[in-house]
Length: 191
Image (cartoon, rainbow, N blue to C red; front, side):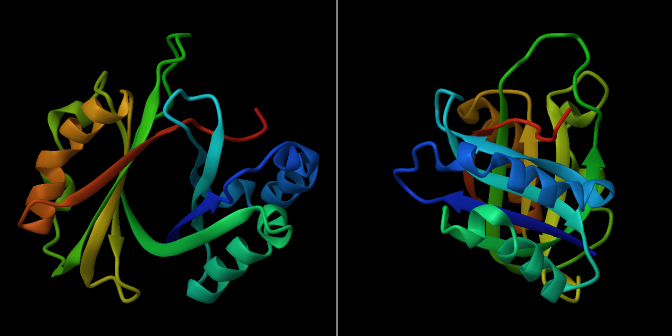
């Protein structure tokens, strides 16, 4: 099962993240072959770490909770909180290889549970195709996978533009205007 695990940094962190970085990396190395997506969320300037996002394959919710709470930053009290939500992958494009480091945004949508209709990937906007700005999309679903509760997307754009790319898709899935949030993000990992 895929789970979207998002941990938010505790306000006022100084160098504490850097002090525990090797412990964090060593822990994440144990899951390397199970990550579909990973990376930090960033402030509006794209400079400061504000949290961590992982979409990880684990056996069940209990394993997703353990993944979150056994993480060294969590154990050290550096995160203010986390969410762990079941996810269903819709699209995942390779990172850009043109050498430019363009800004990316994580867009998260939430809505009241709606029965899954199947064919959700058919609703993806044209920006998801080759050369498009939509790099990753997953549905957030209830634990038995029968209802959608939201979505996550990574868009090669700044937050305001990224929301506009995702909004038509999210609104169709929610069957109403979806509550969307957006924050800067970048792919993570040791490489």
